[in-house]
Length: 127
Image (cartoon, rainbow, N blue to C red; front, side):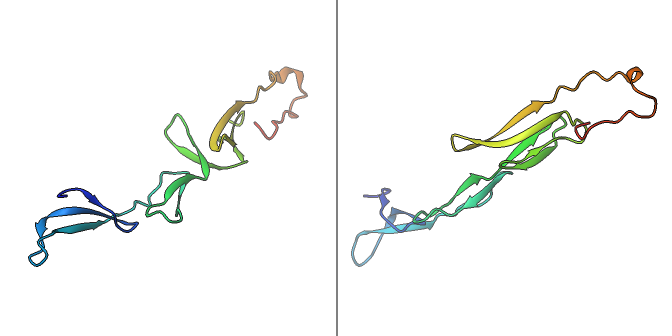
């Protein structure tokens, strides 16, 4: 019937068109190729799906967006601390098949320089 979808190949969409074949007097089937977008957002990668026309974007990394709008990519199972704040740590982990960022803050002891021998003060790796 005119305008209805017609079964076709995996990567094309076909409809019963408005034009008739002059010999058979049947409506001509018009087909259009389906164009798949392979562009994925940051932290995702395009993966082909077997027996499907278009693949899908799958999350591979976590993305941390900081208050200044800069972003940082963290691989699954890894962590990252911003250079400006070593007391904050962002971990990339998987929960229910989804990658999530867990933010933790290290509580540093109160620093009292008067309790130190002058010139011996040092900070640890976390700052």
